[in-house]
Length: 206
Ligand code: SF4
Ligand code: SF4
Image 1 (cartoon, rainbow, N blue to C red):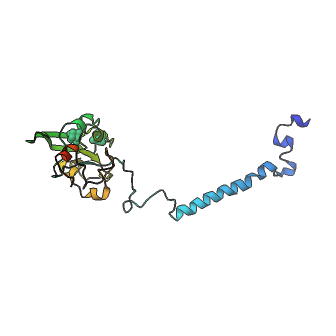
Image 2: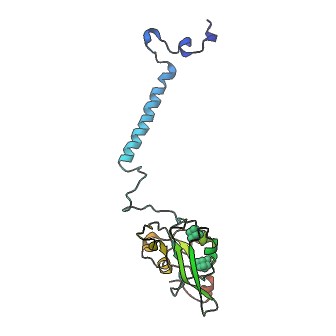
Image 3: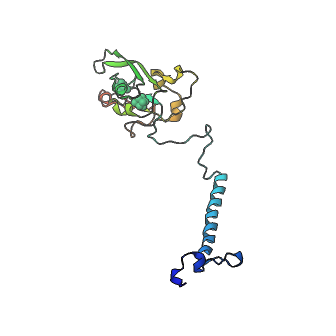
C-alpha cells in the first residue's frame, strides 16, 4: 500500500498500536498545554468567585443593585409646587394601558387653566406589566416611574396603589426615580419639573 492511500491515523503511522501502547504524536502533544491553560482560567475564575470578586449574585435584601435611570418600577404621580397632582385626568394613560390597570375618576377644578384633576387614581400593580406606555402617553409629565420593585403584599387590596400612595411614598427617597420623559430636570421625587405653563405663572419647583 502506498503512503498516498493511507487514511486512518493508525494506517498513516500517526498512532502506533504496537503492543497496545499509544504513542503521542505532534498533534496530540499540543493539546496538553492548551488543556492546562484552560484549567488555569477555570481555577482563576473559581478563586475570584469564591472570594466574591466575580460573584454574579448579591446579598439581597441587604444589598440592592443600582439599576439604570430607565428602570421601570412602581409609578410616581408628580406634584405641582403646591403639592397637588400634576395630573389633569385626561385619561391618556388609562386609554393606552393595554393591561387595563389604571382607574381614574375625574373631578372639575374651578381653575380654568387646569379644569380637571383626579379625584381617584389607582393602578392595579398585579395587572401592570411595567411597560412604561402610560409615562410615554402623558402630556403633563404627571406620571413617571421609579426604581422601586419591592411590591410584595399580604392582601389583594394592598396591590392597588391609590393616589396618595402613588404621590407620596417614603420609600421613594431610597429608590429614586426611574423611567421618565426627561432625565435632565426631574431627578428626584422632591424636585418635580415645573411645567412650562406653571413656569410662565412664576411658580417654582419645590
Ligand atoms: S406601565 Fe404599562 S401596564 Fe403598567 S400601568 Fe402603565 S401602561 Fe399600564
Ligand atoms: S397621568 Fe397624565 S396621562 Fe394620565 S390622566 Fe393624568 S395627565 Fe392624563
